[in-house]
Image (cartoon, rainbow, N blue to C red; front, side):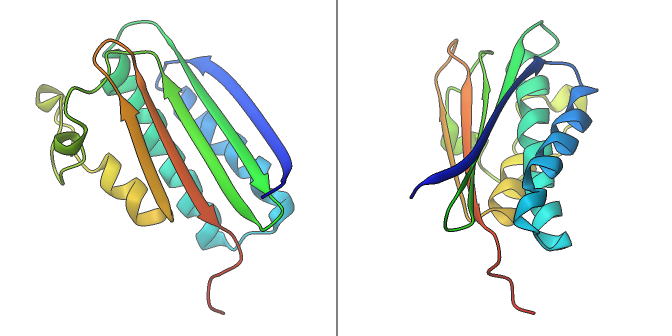
Length: 145
């Protein structure tokens, strides 16, 4: 499917940049005229992915997060959130409901579940010491009226 628009933003892995990522994603989606539900679904999934990168990927260390997005001619949105943090040793375990790698921080363990719920697809690739990439897709304009 042909790309009609794309963006890429790199930002410091700081918690205040989670809101920046949500706002940037919302602005990028505006030309598609998404419903409020579609907009919030994508913004929430981006927020969760960015928060995971900051909290779990870097665990307080310095680093960068990349948010890349594409809009395709069929009104599908492709997103990629990348960190170069600690990585995930067991992706299947990390995707389990309520699992958290940081229980001392009182994390809910709902990040991947939220992303899967709000998006059409989610793929996670990671390896210890090599960071994590979360790829998300969503079709815009398929919601019932």
